[in-house]
Length: 164
Image (cartoon, one colour):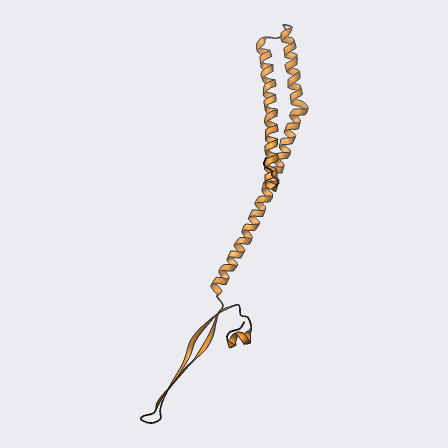
């Protein structure tokens, strides 16, 4: 609701209005020796302060918030992409172990065991084949662990991670 004539005339003003009595009229009238009259009145003038400093500071804050939002959005997309690539790589390595390396290591160990029991292979050679088989099994389990870790990182990056 407008309180002043300025507000009634101009409508809602979005600027800060300072009312200052800038023009002061003082009159002295000497009508007779006994009749001295002082007249004093002031006119309040409205000075519009557009508050340029705070407006500029607010615009800078808005621009900073927009840039921070863009950076955060870019970081989120990078996290999702990196987690997805790690998941794909982990799946590829685990598949290689499953399709080739585990089978080759098992056959090598079985052949070495057969040869050792028949006396055609020394104990150290058999133990070396057993060590290689176990190292391959360990590497396969590590690849599965890396795959599952990448899967959880991807779920966390996209926001669908569910804790037990």
